[in-house]
Length: 281
Image 1: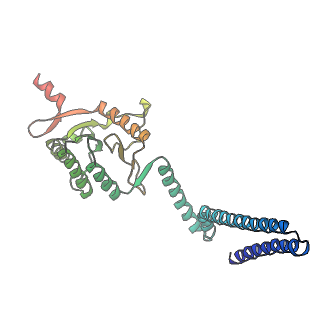
Image 2 (image 1 turned 90 degrees about the vertical axis):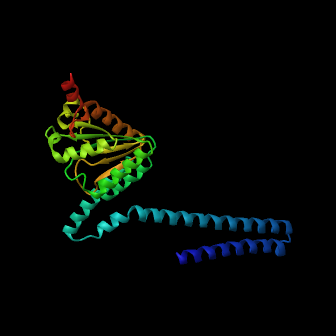
Image 3 (image 1 turned 45 degrees about the horizontal axis):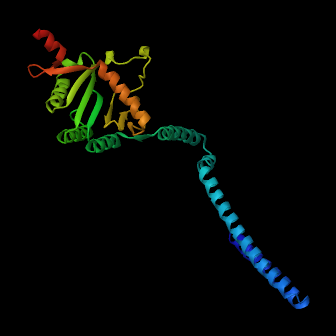
């Protein structure tokens, strides 16, 4: 690079000397002062123009080389892996990276479990109008620190006047489970609009609807979604604020809500509101 720069400087100097020499020749030998001045001026302009052109070409060349090395950095690194087992591992890592990039292209930010609940708590604290969520009723839900912190952010939202609606996805046997009763009753008494949906009543493939969801997601103010992946992997879930993707989750929530049951409290137990009405009548 330094040699090229020196050659360019020498070329400019040679061009200047040639133009000046020709101008001197016209002035001294041919005694044509006007032509000498014109030739000298044109020579200076041509030297300047070629200097600027070379500088621009060199900058363009450097930029292209930098971009080329940046694009091919990973292929070059992979080509230097000689061990067959290391090559297999490298290909696995590349496959995972491609999946992550695909998610990012679709507007999804992949998150591990800690990041997921931290992000969920942060956007819950930013909620202004409503939080709607679908959750599986999993064991240990009331004891996991990350989930407790996320739930506390929901309670803070309630204190600000934000409406919080949560649909728990359960089996029919879960409703009689003491731990499930404890979770449902606590959220009900915290003024969360709690509903339950039986898993066997949720959308199925025979309905021609999307069943790839984990049924574990939250939508904040109809603008941001956090969703747990249906299958475990490197990432626990993702966040998106892409309007088209948010609309898909809003549609899925409406489908689940259409299958959900309202609840009531009877003798300190959560029961279906419809059962209470049926007994009363």
